Image (cartoon, rainbow, N blue to C red; front, side, top):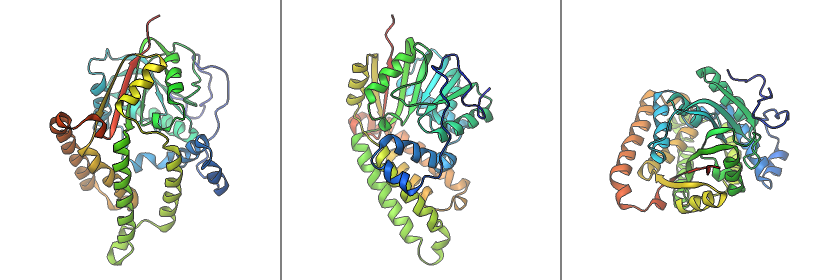
Length: 335
């Protein structure tokens, strides 16, 4: 069972009885201004702001499409994992996309979701309950994880490390809460070169879409100005919350320095990112009701075709640092 209405129920593996804060989905202008100078406050405000609409914005679901996607990322970096793991934790869970879909694929039997954003923990727990998964949750700073030593068999995360101010400190915490021999798997981390071209394409797509839809019959494809303004304010915070980019070698070095062994990295999505980022930005810029199943089929089918090109052609000739996503795994040494 999950604990949506009582996130603060004591967990035997959690340290202390601290009451988790409530979500704050409507930040004031003063709070946003303060967050521009405080990255952790920005993390909370931005992700609380996005929590209730995040799944829709990023086409996140918990069906076979994304079960296969999540499991594909896991198998890409740990192809022979001894699944199922007993208890797994997701660091920076967002709405639970990675862990909940991995659990549905048989990777773990029991889960814990953690995030600095109370809003995201709330939504992740609600998603887990709807799926009938055995998951608890805590509001947690990744640099000070509120669980005891040697608690988890597996720690996972998707697109989280680049939000954390001190990545090595966080990885040390991950190793602390892992049992000896336990493994971590992080996927979806932006590469330095990939982040450059993804942001450029996203900004160009946003500018083109929001300007073209000002005119004539295309106005029906324009979101209300208030929504566009709110998205622009969220984008200003996004520039604050996205702290790092990495090369595969960067993450290997950080994981090894934190004390992990059996450290390995991988990279994926080049052609897929070239399609994916304009598609996602376009989806965010137009009314969702304008995009039906036909669009969803085009977007997912196109991503699959581009992924095939990445896997079967580009990976053989293009250095890993040019791909958009970096994956990293490591193991806690046996005592």
